[in-house]
Image (cartoon, rainbow, N blue to C red; front, side, top):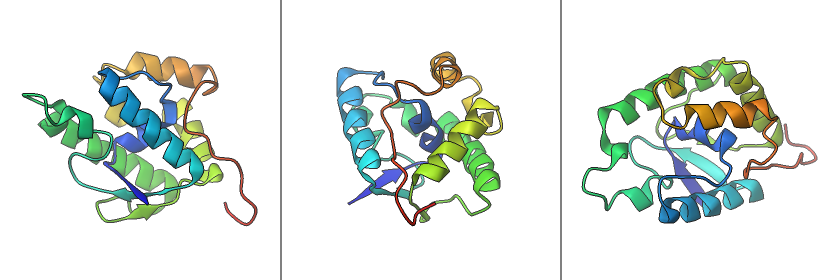
Length: 147
């Protein structure tokens, strides 16, 4: 299967440690983290994605706000620059260990953090990065022949 993600969630997954907006959100994200760790690929989408799904029944889900779309644009540009490839709706991405490590290194260095400005989780994400991503749930072992 394929995991549908909006661009700014490429950054969120780097520091996900099992905390979220609601118990349903966290349970859903735990499942996504497990699937990513098993090697499922990512299909980039515009707007709400698999991470947003539990929030869409709320009266005014934040994932439909302009601020989420702005975060997507900023994250897409940062990640595209980092990976030297397009990051836009319709693109597939295999989050192999080398790419995950490169993205985490860039996140720690502040190179892909434009989308994080004003995010309520920014402090937690910074602490997770400063701790070396120790308790993160998305893990990818290096696979022979993959970079």
